[in-house]
Image (tube, rainbow, N blue to C red; front, side, top):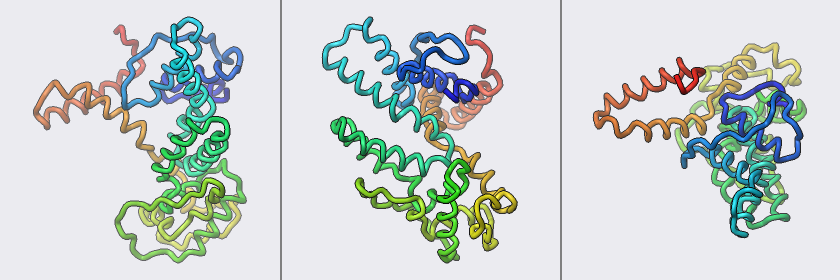
Length: 283
């Protein structure tokens, strides 16, 4: 509801998914405009959100669509999953500093839901554990710059990081996923380690970072904190960008076999879309 009231949508498909979930969960009339079901758009295997939009529409139109008993059960199950879990965390996934805490919350919610529907929850838990990137030492530190996170939690994380000697060299390698116990999920602070200093090294923040010892209410006064925070809150999350790039390549890959011309073509299409984003398609 807050997103709808504030009109916070990077694209119209985000608005559509939020409105569908809002209506499905019994939110009543939309605060800003009249609700209507839009004509179905293109669905692509690389666009996870398009599948969610289709499934939510099918659930809302269940009385008008002929389903078998099994189809009806599957659509209802997926609609519940999307509305209760997927939509919220997917829509927040664009903001990198939210992701470590959101991943833990998502995992905790699904573990709790396994008592209600183990057939759905167990595969989801398995999938989440294959994508624990934001809970690695390198990325969990992003939560320091999540100003919606409790000051106590941020303070504990900061003191834990400050207590760890800063490595002189960071070896190149794949981040190591933490071991997650379903019945005893870790605190964010317990995931902090030596490689959590990596982001400071990459940003050229070579000072001692004494602000980590201060209460979070004073961090804003420190240049290094402001610099790192501004970088982290504007960090581009790759999932959505990558999905759109895959679709772009597949749409235009048949036009030319020349790699150089193909790259020029992709750049031209991207530039055109940026310039004429708001124009109606009929033009």
